[in-house]
Length: 273
Image 1: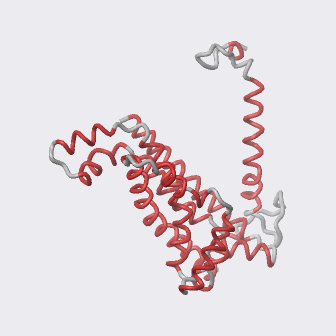
Image 2: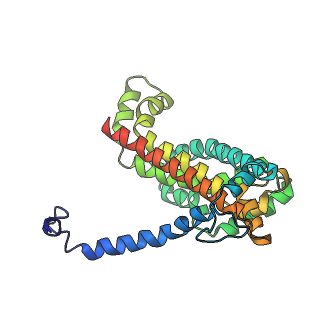
């Protein structure tokens, strides 16, 4: 009972007074996690249909996924697109965020708004616009076109995350290095980048996940040999009830969660050092 009367923060509000807030937080967490909790057990079902809870536990649909050339090809395409998107979006986003941070232009806020606009408008509009342009330049169903389209969605995330980190960075440190003879590029690489590396790594992981989990743009610009995993999952769910998508979803959940946990662990180790 002492926990209820114990202060929850420096404001001297007790845990008992915050009990309603804890209850609401737990309800929100349950609401958000419920679909995930349901999907994971469904992936271990032996049934030909999606069922919860499973009556017979089996690895049947995992075996079907790893043994299917079509699913493996789609997985390889998604992984390649994710990695390439990360390699394209991260440096461009970091440079854009850094340029806006050191810029003295009055239009810096307007440029920032333009850069993050792709995540402010519905993704379907971005997909339609990209598809229209790709038809003109023959980039539909190509890996290059998919990477460029996903980079449009990933760069704004990089800009937002890195810009947030730069707000707490003291630019005088880099200026001191430059006053001692270092070029701007070297001063950035040696002084600035190590101090914002957690945000850069987080941005890179978010860029990868943005591409790996994206389906709407992929429905418009990918196909054939360059069809993504999420596109095939959507088609499998639309055309027939294929329990394989439950096993793939479980694997994607594990991959996404592992990457985010890894980023948080890396950031915590940076803070300790």
